[in-house]
Length: 352
Image (cartoon, rainbow, N blue to C red; front, side, top):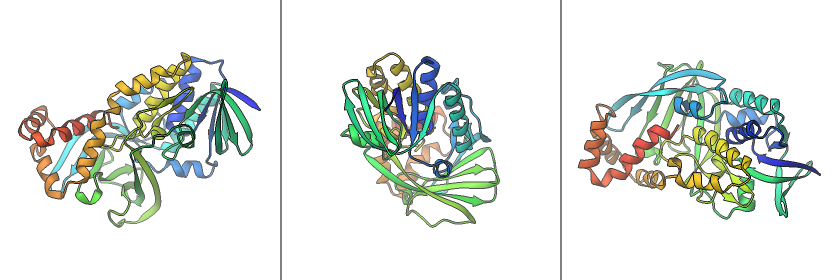
């Protein structure tokens, strides 16, 4: 039975981020990343994503370099039910996520890490770590990281808590370029059940998505994908010698529905505390993190109950833009919407 210092289940953004940062800190450690997807299904699965990443997220993930850039993003444009259109500065990128993941795999393996394409079937705790049963045999490790997505096997085997909501989302790749390659577009309305419809540039195509069942797709559909987005993060992200990162811990922001930034950062933080020989610091980081604020999920629940008139009332103070004065007016004059105002402001800053 092969033994590793750390096994990371899931070769997505959070898992690869954890593996890379861990080997940069502890180059002599034996680190394995295992993933259930085959080489054929892996890239298609990871295309189900808006693929938007802010400048701040790129800065946080260093020394991992951003690759696979499709577009430089300069603006976000919002369309509200009363016809209000708001265009604001939003600095970031649209990436080719499978290409970016490919470069991260190369970096991880170049540092001495191993990747196993196999499905985790069960986890058993041992005196000095864990024994993992996979289809191709058993593996033992001292530390275990669950980076295996919304329906995490590590979480179901070791943790009693689950993300509070699973949002089914459909995504469509439409033939034809958007009018502006530097702008990401959001459409809000009660039909989107507390979320929105996005339209992002994607090369010669348009990436469009929304919660399942909100409307019928339109345009020339080239590809259709579906995924569940876990929101309402777990409070307990550490159990003994194991931890959860990214979607496995339900870390997606419930207001922006962005998950790339926190996935990369949580993997980096987990690596830091693994290298120190204790995961208590990782739990403390999450407890104190701005990403774990309960106000985001509370705002999602509130917004899910709004009709179009409520949304139009909410956005009215911001119809000329998201300046500081507009937020102050909304906060002072609309006490009943203060939680939503603060959650919306913070999600715009950290939610992608």
